[in-house]
Length: 249
Image 1 (spheres, rainbow, N blue to C red):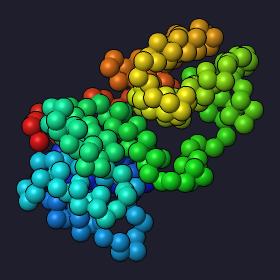
Image 2 (tube, rainbow, N blue to C red):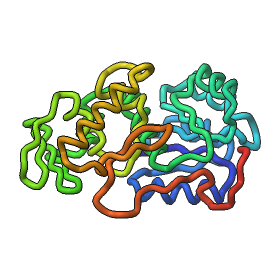
Image 3 (tube, rainbow, N blue to C red):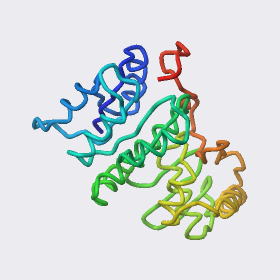
């Protein structure tokens, strides 16, 4: 997947490009709003699937850049910034941003948000489905056969309800990646999550009990849930990828 990263701090950008590259993304780095808008002009190359847009740019405010992007393109935009006030969030979303991520953020959450807006922005269910892993999914001894909608743990069949299966299959697509509550309800229940938090907790609890693996699905406080991967090396909390501790952009 091809991404456009708009970030004027080279240290932050270099670290983030490296992390995204390890997760299979092709990233072009733009250091200013002008450079970002130029990069989005069609040139025969594969189009960008997502734009990660910082707001503190040297030549113009990121809000203006978002507005100009939205005026000429439908590419999904995720604002990534230290501006945490609610007015900035609302302004960014009203300008057409698809998501708004505040620094410091968890890298796993950012990856999940990138995939979520890319699926919504593709407008092609077949294309989105093609990006998902094919064949059975397997993690920590749990095998998920999506074609036959069957789950087994170390060879033992585990009967699940329809929603339990869909929930487990979603989390198993990217072990270690945090799925937000909003995203889970959108993809599993096809509805908003507001007021339905208890429903999700009940389904997660039922999954843990039926699978006999209470530690398989981890709750990430204030965000959502993730499936614990087989190997160590989960994405770590990341606000300033360079480690410089700089904030306020």
